[in-house]
Length: 262
Image 1 (cartoon, rainbow, N blue to C red):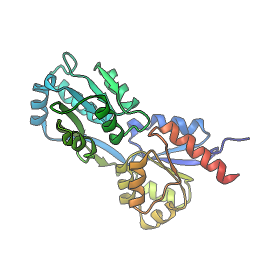
Image 2: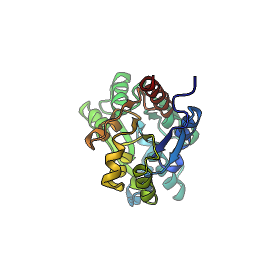
Image 3: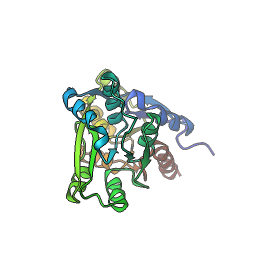
């Protein structure tokens, strides 16, 4: 029996430098990934605030990492100004395996906290279970439009949380016309979304006709936060990964397609 996704053309909306894992998972399942990056990232213009944080970096009890990009832009700035972020750095507590890998690769003492639910809610629950956070001081680097679940939850428990904006997510508009054409011509079988930002920019960049046609395709979301973003835009995913992992998302999409075709 052939693979359920054999020959199907699946849209990949992740940023170009983050799409390799999803592309590989789709190819392994027999699908043809159609890569049209809808998001890109840029540093924010708050160098002075970054410098202040780096000057007191070792004073934090821990760094809370929910984004690989947040760490990348912080490391880039530290390198530009000649600051050593590794020596005497506080522990880095990560939301999941991807952020753990990024922090460990940078030479930081890192540990993944959340188990199963690799999101801010899971990380908050794990951290509150791990220790008494009252009186502790945490640093949370993140995107400009980040969720407040983790810092607000810790503050309610008596902690101090310094949220540091290190980057912003922007639309990659270069291939908007191609995306609309693919949808209108019926050249896609499915859509994958790995962040609320990709959902937002998808809906911004395509035509109304393309948007209507998108509703009839297979739609897969990497987790509940992205699922909510889709539903808020009137797009209803048939597949929501049980854990936010691209391999899991593709496996569950394969099973859903197999059940439908059976």
